[in-house]
Length: 546
Image (tube, rainbow, N blue to C red; front, side, top):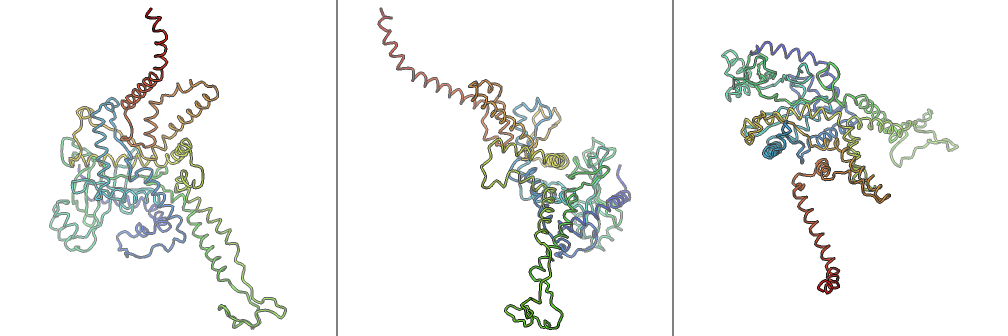
C-alpha cells in the first residue's frame, strides 16, 4: 500500500523535531574541529555564503588534525586502498569445498574490488568523508547507486540532510533524505523519466520557481504488503517515495531490493538512534585546549612585548621603545632602574597543560593506538613474535569500535553492490550448486584490522615454537615439535599476515618439492656410500666366488 504524501511530510516533521538537540550538538562540534561543515545543521534552507570563514571559534587545530588522522586510521584498518579487504564464501561449508564455487567467489570478489577502484565510482574519497562524519558526529551515511547502469557510484550524504529510523532490533531500515533542487532541475528529472509527469497545477507552480530552491523528500522504508510476484518496485523489499514538500505532491514511487544506504554509528547510548562520536567524548578537552591556548598566547604576547611599569614622576612621559633609543631619567641617581616589566606567569606550565589535553584528544581519536607499530626509529628491529604481539594488542583495542562498522556499514554496502552489479549483468553466472542453495554467502573480512584481531593465533604458534626450541636445546629431545602440525599452521599464518594467494604454494606443490628433496638426499647418500660399497665388494668378492 502506497503512502500518502501528507503522511510522508508528517513523518519528516517528526524526524526533524526528534533530533533538534543533536543538531545543536553537531553544530558546536563542527565549529571546533570541522569548520568547513559548520553552519550547515542550523541554517538549512538559507543560502550560505560560499567561501566565507567559519573557523573563528577554533583557536587550536589539534582536534581537527586528530579527526583527520582518525579517518585515516579507519580507512587503513577497514577499507585500505591498495588491498582487497574482504572475501566472499558460501554459507554452506560443503559448497565452500567445491572448486567451481571457490572460483566463482574469487571472481565476484575481484569484480567488487575493481569496480570500487574505478574513478567514476568515487569510492575512496566518499568513504573518507563518511569516516570524518563518524569521528565528528557519530554517524556516517553513504548512498550506493549504479553509475549509468555500468558500474557503481558512491555518495557520502551529509548528516544535515538525512534522517533515519530503526526497526525493533535496532537495525537501521528507514532513511528520509531532504534534497534541494531548483524548479528547472526538477523538470529535468521529469523529462528524464526519473519523476512522474506533473499535474497542471503543480507544473505551473514549479515553472514559477525555475531558479528558486524547492525541497524534495526521498523516503526509503520497508515495504508493507509486498507482492513478491511483481517485478516492479511494489515487489521489492524497500519502498522508495519522492515527494515535493512545498506542495505535498508525490513525484515518484519505486523500490529497492536492498537498502541503498550504508549508515554506520560509532557507539550508541540506550534509547538513541543516532551515534555518539569520539569528538563528543573529547569535546571537554577540545574546549579546554582552546581556552588554554588563548591564555598561553596572551602570556606569549606579554613576554615578547612586555608591559612596562614606570615610576610616576613625570620624567618618563617621553619614554621611547625604539631600538637604540636613549631615555634620560630611566634610572635613579643610584643606578636603580625606574622601569620594570610586569610578571607574566609561567608559559612553560601552560604548554605542559596543553600537551596533556592533546594527549587525551589523540587517545580518544585512536591516534596513539595507531602508533603502536611505529616510532621505533633507532631501536632494534622487532622480532616476528614482537610484531605479532603488537598487532594483537592493536587489534584488541580497535575491535570493539570498528566491529560495528563491519556490521553496519560494510556488510550492507557489499549486499547493495552485489545487487546492483547483478542487475547490470556484470557478474558471472552462478554455479548450479549455489543456485540450489539460493546464493547465500558470508563475508569474511581480510582487512589489517581483521588480521590484527587474528594475530593472537599466530603469536601463540610462535611462542610455542620458541618454547619447543628451548626445550630441545636443553634436553636434546626434539619430541616437543611432534605436537606442531606445521603443514596446517603455515597456510593460516600466511593468511593472517596478508600474503597474497598468488604467492602461496599449494599443498601438491609443497609435497612435490619435498619428494624431490628426499630423492636428492637419497641419491647423495648413495653416491657418498658408493666408494665404501665398492671396496667391500672387492674385498669379499673372491671369497664369495669361491
